[in-house]
Structure formats: structure tokens, C-alpha cells
Image (cartoon, rainbow, N blue to C red):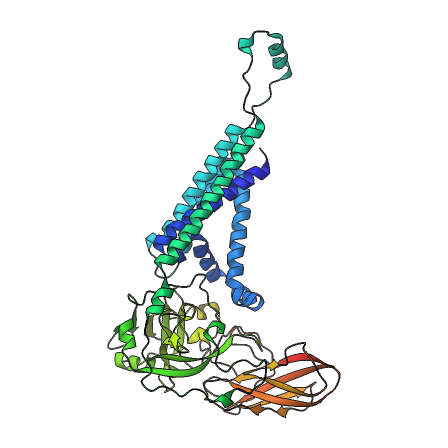
Length: 529
């Protein structure tokens, strides 16, 4: 039996197994599909340095890379299992069974999982085992008979009785075609099951249609639009307000949670006198407030892209907490997401007068699914990992001593206050610019403190004050421009630093994002021609 055919049979069994898993997951939820369940568990178990490497290297495509790696690894293991089953069929079946139990464990390890969530992985393991056994038997049945010994053959040749002559067996080519046809048919059926399961899941959990049907009321006191002067008219500079389609997304969700707002409810519980249970309609009937706010990710490198500004709309989080009656001694507010993520925020900051929201809309439309539909928390002054729970379902008033949220358990700073940051956007890195006057422009932020000054220098020379655009508020980034006069031909390095409204100058010391946010001055190298 050829090793290639045996390996192909193993891959075919894996395709059938994953296809059936997707089909069953159409009933239990897309997040329970075997590849997604195992990938989610892998994210939780991945060491922090490796996670940071993935975000730094692959950016927002890190999840696609992970899923691709899982599928490639599955294919290689399936090929080995096919080779093993050619020699020991029961061992090959056992490998598929083991992977089924692994997938079931991964599905059940998710927060809020029930026994039914293990069904796709268990079905997948059973189908894989049965398929590899069936293909192994077919290959053995199609294998050519063993040759007789020379003495036996000589005796047979001396016997002229036609009745004792062996009848011709099927040709090896015919048998090989039958095996290849069965293998190909298995792959085709498995692929169709997988695609069909995904289509059924998309239809059953069509959050996009539910989102489109939501009608968000206006704010009780709408904010005026940002003045035009908040953004200098410099080509290549980021828009002041980030479009929803361009807003960064960094989270651990391999598949987006699909929450039906008709059945959604938010509990406010823990160290409160009056626990609350709010439906989505209840939330929409609260006096809604608007908040212009720059949100940034703690994984953002110096000069990185993971920051964006938007106008949020939602119910006042401090007002709801006061209605619940926070008990003395509570100092942490933990948000629980539909996908099991937990995010902890200092409670005193939520209640200190800043405008913190349970947001339901973003830039004038219902929250996009990727950004937390139907509800998320927003608390200015903190990185997203300590302030922005997407797909929010629970708020637990507790203490830092009693509970460590997801990222704190993995070594990240407990508070997550945003560090002062600035970046050069124009000219772009390694750009070629003409000699003479060169416009340098960019963005700076120190959320909830505000930016008081930005300075630029070239080739380590003296710092030059940049011209700041109109200040739209301490919770927003501030854009700036600077004219580099007398740029001479050659290669030059441009650096930038910012000073927050409290007078603290951005530190030059370089630090990685882990554990409390990146620090250092951003620089670009350009060539003047």
C-alpha cells in the first residue's frame, strides 16, 4: 500500500470530521465548531510573549494566521494518522477519537459552556474514526493478493486441469481507482458538510440583520460636531474621527460572538445593594449620552496603528452603578463578555466624574458586531484591556483582592492607564521628500489628561515646537504640524515627543507593550532629494 494513498485517506477522514463538526455547530453555535474551540483554547494557553509577537507580526490578521496554522497542523497529523491506519487501523481510529475528546475539552473550557457544546467535537471525532477505518478496509480489500512461492507456482503450472486454474482477480489499476474515488468522494462530502454547516450557522445566527433592525434613540443632549480645525489639512494625516470600518480590532475572539439583542440582558451584581437586570430595550430607554473618545490598545507599539477616535452613544455607567448602590470597600468593576473575556476597571475612576458609558452606538450607528454589538463598556483614560468589554453581559462590582481579570492573570498591569504617546504620520517611513521646507504632521494622545505640547527634532538636533490643532477635549487625541525648514539632501531621522496637560514629558526610554504599554519616542527615517 502506497504511503501517499494512505496519507490522503487520513486527510479525507479529517475533512469529513471537520465538516460534520461544522454541521453540528450550526445547531450549537459557531464558536463550538472543533477548529474554533481548539483555537480559542490555544489562545488562552499561549504565553503572553508569543501573543505579543503574533500581534506585532501579523497585526489584525493574527486570528487568520492562527486558524490557518491549526488547519495545516490538522492536515499533517491527519496524513500521519492515515499512514498509521494502513498498518494499525484501530490505532488510526484512536487518534481521531482522541482529537474528538480534545476538541470537546476545549469547547467545555470556555466560560459559560454547557454539555451540548461538546457535541460538534465528539461527532467530529466519531466520524473521523469511522471514516479512516472504512477507507483502510477498502484499501486492504483492493490490495493485490500475495504472490505464491516458486514451488507452488511450478506445481500449479504442471497441472493441466482448467478447473484448478485460479480465476483472474480485479486489476490493480481498477482497485486503485476505486480507492481514489472513495477518498475523493469523502473529501467532497466533508467539504460540502462544512460549507453547509457554516451557511446554516450564518443564517441561524444572522446578527447583521438583527443589528440592522435596531433603532437607536438620539442622545438626550447631543454634542456638537468636532470643529473643522481639529484636523490640519495635510494629505496623508489620519482623519480625526476614525470610520467604523477602519477602527482597529484586537481581541481573542476567533469567531465574533453573535448576540441577539431581543434576548440580551445585562446584570449589575456583586457588592451592590440593589442588583439590576437590564434588557436592551431598558438600556435604550435610559437617557443616552455621547462621548468623543480616543481608544487605544495596550499592544500598540510606539508609533503603531492601534488607536482610533469615535463618537460613542450609550447609557451612563456611573448613573447605573449609583442606582445599584455600590457598597463600601468595592474597588473594581469587572465586565464579563459573551465570549468569556473578563476586563477589570478601577471603580473609583468610573465614579470620579468622567463620562463612562455602556455604549450601544458608534459614529451614529448601532455598534458593529466586531466592536461589541449590542453593548460594550467605554471608560476614558484606560487601555481597552482594562476599560472596554465588548459583547458585555455582566458587570460585577468586586475588589482587586478578590478577583483577577483575564489579562491580569497573564501578567499585565492591573490598572492599564494610557501612557502619553505621539506618532509621525507625514512623511511616511522611508519616504523621499524634496529639499527645502518639509511638512511634518502626526497625532498625539494622553487620554483623559490631554496634550499640551508636541515637539519635533531632526537628526538629534534642538527640539522645535509643533503647531497644535484645536483641542477637542482631554479624552481625544490631538493632531499637529511642524515645518522642517532647510531640509538638505541625504538621509535624516525625525523624532517626536509630547507633553501632557499635567506637564509630564513623554519618556524617551523604550519599553515593550507588556506589561503596561509601550513607551519611547517615535521616529521615521526619510530621504531628502
